[in-house]
Image 1 (cartoon, rainbow, N blue to C red):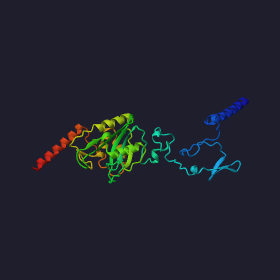
Image 2: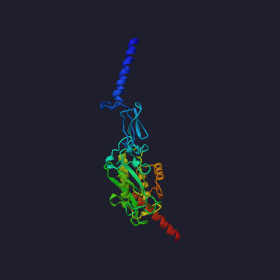
Image 3: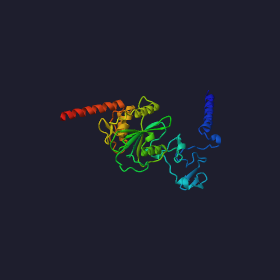
Image 4: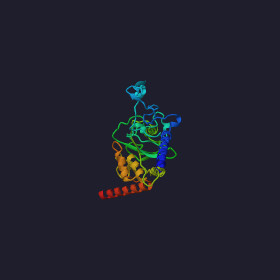
Length: 310
């Protein structure tokens, strides 16, 4: 009985050793039987080492068995920047669109300013006030303009911004991709292509509301944005005040709210937007019916006020 147990133990040990040599090292079938290590050095360092006895000391390679210098460190490798903080463990599936960026880098190594545009999300952009030139730096740095871009399964940018074509007054108007502000279009195009824009303050990927799929959220945001009433009596107000007044920020937050984004998420989103975001979180009458009712209510209040004066 003891002999049988000893035989089984010996057989198990031998099989385990053979298994370890053949399965733990996926490169063994190609002739590499040494220890495998993984790095995040953008390809500057070897992913495996053929000889574990050779170590790097300063600018030379030293064989610890023979006590001899066997080579010199490549200067480019010596000076290589190893990005560990923002490196990813897999290749970006859209890396072919960004040849100038390593496919393992997340958000161009700038996750504070950028998100990872995977082509299937709702993005809130925060910028300086729009200028007529997409690359000209706006002269009003403290005020913040916001707009929404939806990238759905069709991989098309659905852009929505709200403002006035008469400057700081006039009817509140909806702008879509075909008539987008020049600066807005340049900002979201640059972000999509992985480039920085001097007017962009932030780009926030909106979380999908509970109980909805990504596609459902995309469609809801698009349908809500396009249901804007465009009532000529709803005017642009810089601070976004009043039931019949609004601006880009009241419009952006109203769209998100009516698309299922809860108050806490809106509040958290506002805290991530740099600068003065006048009106963000102030939910407005949105559809033609809602705006008409708000205008009628305001007119009635004004009539009653005039009568009391007389």
